Amino acid sequence: MRNAVPHRKIFKILHLIFLFAAGSIYPVLNNFLLKYAFTYKYGLELTFQNPWFINTAISFGLTLLLIVSVIKRCTCPASKNDQSPRGIHLFRIVGMPSVLFLVSSSLQSYALMYMVTTVWQLFHGFTILFTTLFAVTYRHQRLFLVDWLGLFITVAGICLAGVATMIRGIADNNTSIYQLFISFLLVIVSHGFRSFQTIKEEELTHDKLAEPIEVAAYEGVWTFFFNLCICTPVINAVPRSYGVGIYENSKLCIERLKYSSQLCLFLFGLVLTASIYFYCGIVITSYSSAIHRNMYEMVRPFFVWAFSVMTYYLAKNHTAGEKVDKYSIVELSGFFLAVLGTLIYNRFIKLPCFIYNELVDYGNGGAGGSDDSVTRDLIP
Image (tube, rainbow, N blue to C red):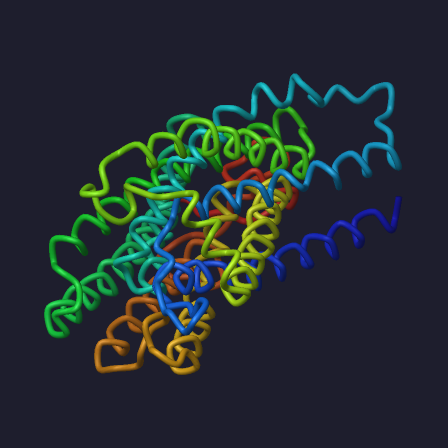
């Protein structure tokens, strides 16, 4: 029993590392697939702007976690006293977060075609805001004044980065303001769905003690079914005049994969990193809480920015990634402001105007749902 806690901490650290690593690469690869002009047979270069097909591939990757889940169940059978949901019962109750995941990922993929990857990732801060609101209203968790201050600073940083992106779009004339504005709205709405999804995952892993890998696998099964059987027929049936992101030709997507090994390689990398990222996110939620999971992810925009800049300067046609210009300084300022809010929220930075002397045991239904006892603030 003495080694149980160190092992638990080691696994938590490993999952955090994989969350940051895969979460930093995943949006860059997604942006690369949506914007880069891949080379096909006879030197033909075309972009692969098919977000629905990409989301279907990602959900298929999550479905493959069922294999790992079955192996784990066979090698580590549950005890007789284990009351956690499994099998068809867990599959049924995972349906709700799966629908939320489908809607949020679809909206985010569409918005990514018109937004800079770093700002797209930085908008994840709205997930923290929505998650906090749902945690207070739906999960009845208690937050303090310093929590709201941290959230306010985080959202202010996001807004600063968003303004920089809009100014760049006006200056470069490469993206219409209307498209950017719609993309911003779609991302904000998508994070509302994503935040409630993380709250439902917290409910499954904390209250019902469901296995994170089974939750991730069943979410993959549900979303793969919805994408393949409902969304794919619809997007293939709508008129081509509806434009990119709404109309898709799935048969043409498969044909392009046949004639471009480079496209296949990047799609495989995206599916792999996305599966690791979403699975580790659920594991982190089971260890701590939905709020803390989303606060951890606020550190990722810097790494996303670094990978995105590398992609821009390594890609031969500079159609993907992000260039460094005068607006990058404003974007980075917004990022650091958002990180400052995150550090204040997580008590890494303590302000002298607040009192830090209330001890809340997260393991017993405190504000964050963590397994550690953490000092929280009193409202002065």
